[in-house]
Length: 191
Image (cartoon, rainbow, N blue to C red; front, top):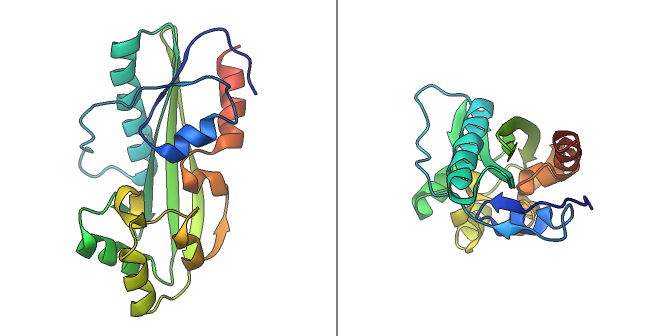
């Protein structure tokens, strides 16, 4: 746990991030950022998550003030140079899970920290490999409620864990925060 005498604000609606941040701070205020998340054309996955975490941070700072520690993040799944956001419907979820089947893909999480007018942004990448999935496995998964609020149409911490052959990198990054690195980045940032 980090002892910090100012208010800590998590600019995220993600229940997974809200749970993970409690491993670092006892008390966190949740204030999801409301901003336009349209990406510039031609942006890569790592740049996308860093860009989105920055605009979320700025939106939250306007509401809360710069004297608070604001933590914002964004996660994307990328496969074959395509960024997969949250699926818009069942067909989109099917398309995404089918794309990931039998392949290694990347999960990027970008994080921005701000305090007293200073900001720091970083990102983490984890490689995830799915098994070759049958149509039945894909249908079973997309018929669950799980895929529809998650980048790449899956949450590794839930039923999709059964689709994963292996990962290379930080498991928690795939969940929503590279939590061990985040703690160290925050400690360095608030010094």
